[in-house]
Length: 295
Image (cartoon, rainbow, N blue to C red; front, top):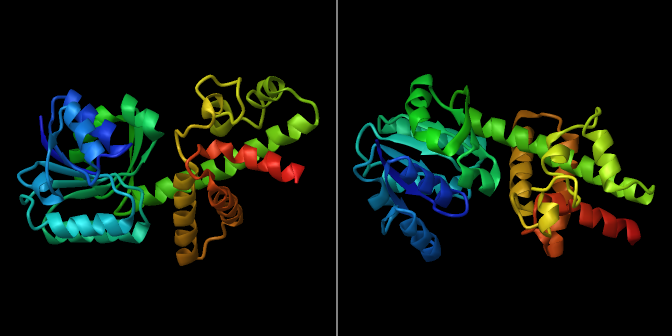
C-alpha cells in the first residue's frame, strides 16, 4: 500500500480520498475548508495544516483543485519539499497549457506526473466508478494505475502531457451540446402534446439515443436516478459545465478549431448561470428553455 498526500478535499476530492483509505492506503490531506477537513478526518484521512505538509514523505501526491492557477501555485510550493521520485497526479480539470506547465515543473524535479481529470461527478467519486483520462508518459501512467484503481471505473491513457485535459474538455463539450439538444426536444415534445415517457421510449431506442437522454434524462420520470427527479440538485452543476465549455473554447481558439455548437452551448449555460441557476444541475437548462418560450 502507498503513502498518499491528497490536496483538495472538496465534493470530488473528499470521497476520492475516502476510497483510497478504504483500499488500505495511508492518506494525508489538506483543504482550505475546515468542513472538508473534518469530513475527511471522519473518513480516515490524516489532516494536514498545509499543502507542503501533505506532500512531504509521500509516494504519491494527488491534487484536485479548481483551476490551472491553483495547481501551478500548489506545485510551486510542494515540489521542492516532496521526496525525489514522488508520483504527481493532478485530477483537476484545467486548461491544457497549465497542465503541460505542471508536467514541466514536475520533470524539473525528476518526478513522474500525469494529468488525470475525471468524469462521473460526485456520485462516481463516492462510488469509486470515475473515468480517469490520463496524459503523460506510459511509465507514469503504469505507475499511477494501481493508485487510481480504488477510485476508478475506467482508466484511459490518452497520450502525452496534457492529453487527459484535452480529452476531458472534448468529452464535456459533447455532453453540454447533447444535453441542450435533448432539452430542446423535450420542450418541443411538451408543446406538441407528447408525454415525457413516450418521447423517451422512442428516442432511447432510436437514432436520438445518447447519454444525456438515457442516463441523465432532463425531465422527471423516465430515468429514476436523474437529477430532474430531485429538483435538479446537481450531480454536475451548471457552473462546472460552463467552466469546461469555456476551457474548450479557449483551447479551440489557440489551435484555430471550429466549434460553433460548443461556443453556442457556452453562451446558453452562461445565461443560465447569470440567471442565478449556476448551482443547479446542468440538465436544468430545460427550465430556462421553457421560460424563454413563454416570454
